[in-house]
Amino acid sequence: MDRVSCTPRPDWTRRIEAQGLTYHSLGLPPGGGEEGLWWDESAAYAFTAAEIDHLEAATNTLHQLCLEAVAAIVATPALMDRFGLSPAYRAYVIDSWRRGDPSLYGRFDLAFNPEREEVAQPKMLEYNADTPTTLIESAVVQWFWLRDVTPDADQFNSIHERLIARWREIGRRQPPGALVHLSSYADYEEELRTVEYLVDTARQAGLNATHLPITQVGWDKGKRRFVDEQRRPLRLWFKLYPWEWLAVERFGAHLPTAGMTVGGLTVVEPPWKMLLSHKAILTVLWDLFPGHPNLLPAGFSAAAVGPDWIAKPMQAREGANIRLVRDGREVAHTSGGYGQGPLVYQRAVDLARDDGRHVVLGAWVVGDEAAGLCVREDAGPIITGASRFLPHYFR
Image 1 (cartoon, one colour):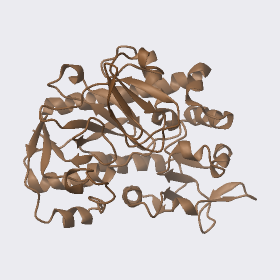
Image 2 (cartoon, rainbow, N blue to C red):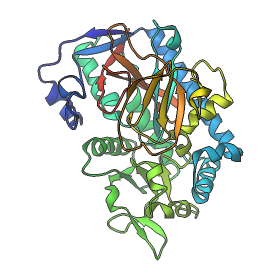
Image 3 (cartoon, rainbow, N blue to C red):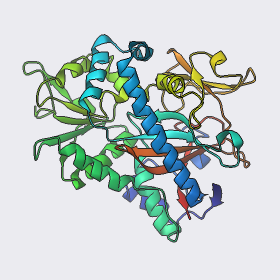
Image 4 (tube, helix red, strand yellow):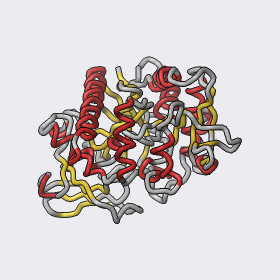
């Protein structure tokens, strides 16, 4: 796992914008990435084939552990209590799991560095199981970078093909020709481009897919169903919008009943994914599988995990409101809008490399299988929404 300097392609901005990555240097605060960049091809991470095999196996193992954890949670009220769901959403999650509502994709954040003993085994930091982004960068842009820059190498990246195959599987549950709606905010570029890309993969799978801005999703009070701006019913609805936001909004109060009838609403990601995207899952995993080599100790107090810990709001995103403590001394923290919620504590591991950069790997899951890898790095010890994305390859 070496960091290799590379010469950026002279026309790299034109190339990646044509591939859908129009936000490669937008919206980052001063100091957020080198020269304000999000996509950075001045370097790449080179893995060995054995390291990739190791990461793929660990990702598949973690996903299976997570599925076992969901099964335990829906069967155990004391575990379900940790997630703070309302009675209606609690039942919604349980019913969704028991129905086998389909999942499309997710992304683990992993700490891994073969040269450091504490992370020589990939360690799960969290599971972005509900609304993961960095998808275009991972599935498309770094693949074309590989073909242009290191065509003799390979890349852990079957994301695009697997998304198409997974959409086909999901589509088989719907009537032929049924309309599939995919929603995001229309004015938030990263989310819009991500959903546009997913619309394209769904269409390549043969589905009748369309983008529907989240603000245009309506509730037909008389027919008690969700509709689009043309009052067409939503049957299969992908939403790049967090479940925890929906669960507390007036709009979201109708969701637990919208899918109960025959031909009702199927939501992707499904309601049971609420459990995996909630950081309380870290405590459940550690309780169920203590000492597992791909997990870190996690609990509801610093004392439960040791002198080096990281405190995370249960439903924070993009590294917001995190506090990193070593030997009782705070060494880093981040700001954000999640500072009032309850916390989960996790054993802190050192993400630093010998060159001082801090690295987190994103391991993609499509359906129930590992599908690819992405690399994020930062000068600081906490990876945030402003940390850079670098391509990778292996030989």
